[in-house]
Structure formats: C-alpha cells, structure tokens
Image (cartoon, rainbow, N blue to C red; front, side):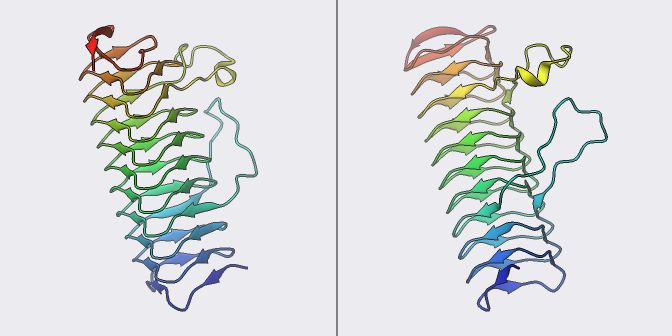
Length: 231
C-alpha cells in the first residue's frame, strides 16, 4: 500500500491509485491522476490535469514492444509539474525541475536536477537528460537519446533515432538516438539525425541539419551542418 503524508495537500478531485507515495509539503491540484508506483517527493507541486505513471499502450500499430515491468515513477523534491504534463511509468524526474504545460515524457526516462522541460516538449522512451539542462517549447527528444549537463536546446528542435524511417521490419532493433554532451547549445529549428554525437561545448546553429558528429568546441551551421569556427 502507498502512503500519503498528513502534511500534503491533495485536491478532492484528484485520482490516487494504490501504491502511491506522497511526501510532506506536496500539493496535488484538481483532476491529477496518479497511477500505481508513483512517488512524489517532499515539496513538489503537481498542477491540474497532470497524469503520472501512465502505462504505454499500443493497438498493435507500433514496432516497439513494451515490457510488463517499469519500476516506479518518481518526481523529485520541490519540482513543479505545470498543467497537463504526462509522465509515463518508470520515469524519474530530479529535484527543483520544472515541467511545462502539456509536456510528455515517456517510459524509463531520467531527467536530472534543476532542469526545465518546457511547454509541449515531447521526450521519448529510455532517454537520459542531465542536470541544469533546458529544453524549450515544442522540441522533440527522440527515444534512446542521451543529453548531458548544462545543455540548452531551443524551440522546435527535432531529433530522430531511425535512419530507415520505419521502412525496415527490424527497425526497432537498430534505434540509435543522438548523444549531446555537456555544455552544448542547439539553436532553434535544428534537426539532429540518428546516432550523431555532438561534442562538449559545441554549438549548433538555428535550422542546421546535423548528419554527422560535431567535434567538441566547434560551431556548425547549414544544411548539411558544417564546421564554421571554434566556439
């Protein structure tokens, strides 16, 4: 069975399933849904219509298969989830992190401390995001991706993990999300293709299409992206 602290504030309209832990100082607003295995740490605030611990589902149209075991869904201390955020099962969010309106984070992801995942950002499955990283509105972070610490990803950035674009029958076995190392900056509207590694402290210009690895400390721009100068 779960445990709800007497020092937590939970709206009467919230739906709290069994095996949920809500620590002291937590505030749960109207129409929040907390599925089994969800843990909300001290001082976090979950705003209206958020859904936590959602199970991934498919009518048979997706190539990816889903495990029956995912682990807990955890929201760290003093973090804030703005209205409509959806966090899937097995995902953990660090402390003092802000999740913007209607963002979505899929199963088995890890989001670090002091991060901002802004409005309408989508983070796909099994992705890791480091500490002090900011991802701005309407960006798409693909599955199986790694993002380091102190990274800034601007609005409308797109990342992908499948070079076959779903045309290969075994595509799900060869997914490779990009790797973005620490201190990288990615400009608005950039596209980062599967398996690309962006080196530490590099900068990707707005609208660039990154088709190959970016060396550390370099600025790349253009279609396809090419090294322009040092940072």
